[in-house]
Image 1 (cartoon, rainbow, N blue to C red):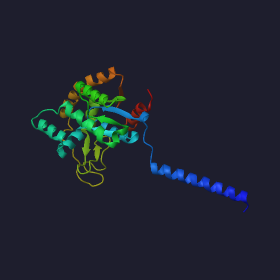
Image 2 (tube, rainbow, N blue to C red):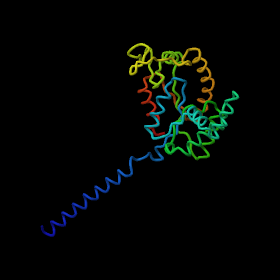
Image 3 (cartoon, rainbow, N blue to C red):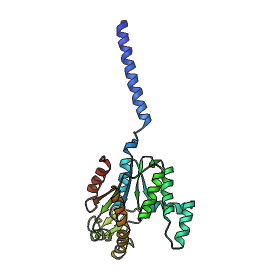
Image 4 (cartoon, one colour):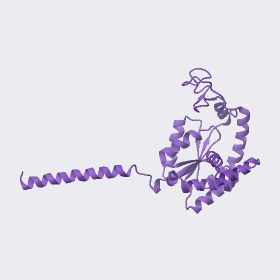
Length: 256
């Protein structure tokens, strides 16, 4: 092998080594995280059974943000007997409502300690009143952050009641069915285990009508509050979950 041929061989070898190094470095860094410009801070509003529990985890996974379900957070704090949980339990034990300050502090703590929140969040279950919305705005302003959007899942009450009163649940696994829309293979029993299905005690028309009345009374002013800020967008939640998801994703990926 002549000097020129050996030189070309060595150049080729170096080039391949550089490509290999670049490949290994990319793998070591792992998947890219969203840049600050791709961050998402949104609130998902909707009545019980509208599909928040279906859509919020998809938002979390698609946009690499944390899902802050305030009801779950409150129960976790109470179970772990954290200072916030102890304060909340003492209020609930006397029949009172957990204060707005406690709820906002729980959210703030998650934003400060949960690594999944570094790219933003989807907030589910809060705020329920205008004062709560104002306190949330104040807390975010202290963090030099602000909301990108507030999305409300809209659905007719009667359709919602028919959806929920037909729900059947397998208690051990949480698998759910519907008497009309997604019935089990054999009436009244779980497809996989053959064990009996149940209807939750609060999945009845009377309870739902009462809960929906409270929801509308509270949420109307909250929706108006965010409409005035230009943040509110509504989605028809009577559509299939896949169509609802496409509409949600379109909102979050459209540049304002």
